[in-house]
Length: 215
Image 1 (cartoon, helix red, strand yellow):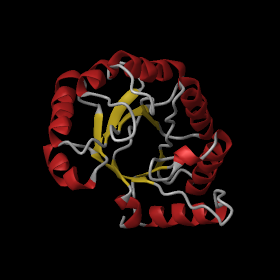
Image 2: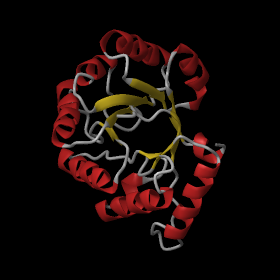
Image 3: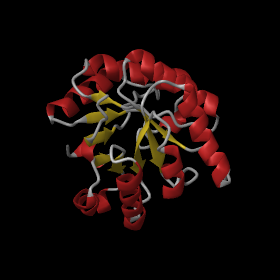
Image 4: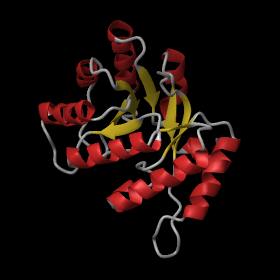
């Protein structure tokens, strides 16, 4: 199994004047990104305003991106939700459509204890058959700590993390953990300001919005 790495775009979502996903503009954007030699596309992303989209819209966006990409790059859609059954539904849809992996953050809005956040991610991972990148974005969702990642990395289909903490110490701890526990585990950074030092320390790529604006 090839695990995505490199420059992965956290894709913006084009909407039309009525607030609906614009299929024509999504297709245009996908082709633009691929023409710039990106390694992967992350639709249904935070910067893509997924929280304003219902389940049908998220699936529709995944369908368009996969159809237009035609296997030319890895597609890793977001599956974050407050309820794990919604994340499972999205992950299964991504699997059916042939996506390379999915991106999953912990539950958001309500502050949860660490065991609940870890349990949420573990429940999804054990319920689907597709590689998962855990998504740590503590500004908007419950934090996924390096200690949690170490435990979760033992699950076969949890293959990496997108860390958007912006904390270089956090990234260094993740990189040190992966060397000891699972050398194949991919650490990707989601904050541009620390991308260069993270890559120098051993991160395997980035998953950022800037990669979609200036690929």
